Image (cartoon, rainbow, N blue to C red; front, top):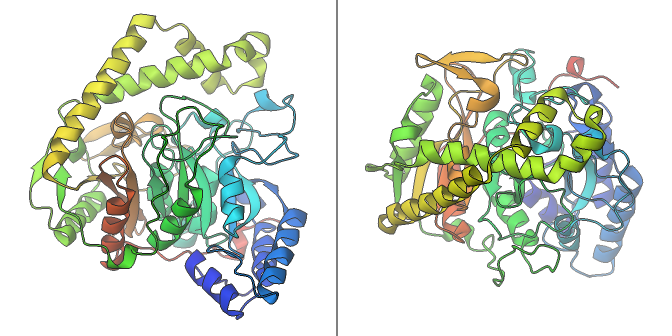
Length: 473
């Protein structure tokens, strides 16, 4: 098997120039997908659909038409994005009786309008309720970085687990995920890929299986910052299928990204300074040095905001799934079922107070950002952990990993601001560690400009396909 060009940018350029065909690119991706059953990363492969799309791209180019900025680029989507003709599983047996989708999710349609080609749906934590990347039905997704390093089966992070695994292994250069409390950012960090959680309401969630409507975001995981920018540009655009989508014009960022000025930066202190694994601490220092983030700022409401995020997540998730919880409780995994039941019983006053705290958190962050363009923070307290590990001591503090791997992502979700993650390899562990780049609302351009500046300073890990012994046909 020949390795494909790593990035979406390179693939699209090669196809536009006639150096490669979309058909060849897609066959390579499909061949790789066929070998990784053991990873628990994929729920469905769209071979016929992908081949038909590739033929259309190649025919368009042969006829002299520009096939799009993502021409021939294979991509995957978390299995909560509707794909026409298929049941959207959302990682749960509770969806088995749902009817097949009658149309693609807005995000999939937008990617394909730009020339990209859907090849697979990917695994996820059940109903997007989890940070670990495991699933009672599908099993735990395997992190390709751990398999390459020493063969140890480590967590991908979640809940966009399969999407991060496919990008980290170089099977696709772009995969769609979702982020409620960190579900793009945590797996991006643990799998060593670029992740982008856009501003709340920036991109349409039409045709996406919801979890917590007041916190849900959609966005890409990608091989490079430029790839993430291309995907973000493609995903912009109005829709009447998402009532909370902001009515704003598209603001493309990819074309001018390479020449964008480096934004002013500060680091987040307080809640975001401890506990840090030494590799994470070193990466944060390197990122701050690279961007001149000599000063720090503190979000005093961060810990409280995290607690409020738990309440909102629990309550909205419980309310959404209450009918199924009553009628078919056995269709849920035990952990998710118990969480949702508890959420359905939360007092309304708790939820109201949590939303009030959310507004206060957004206001505090806005005041901090009046004096800077971006803020830097760790994405996770530690690198990827061995699957099945429930607790780990980091910098003298015992963490409950299923919850605390999202210690630094969850509070920031409450503000709804754009956040990117880039990663570097830890000198001690040999595993990826991620940095969050936090921006002002609707300033994805500055977030991605800072991400690119860090990528140029070594915050990039090339995709790596694990040896064949870790595959199972």
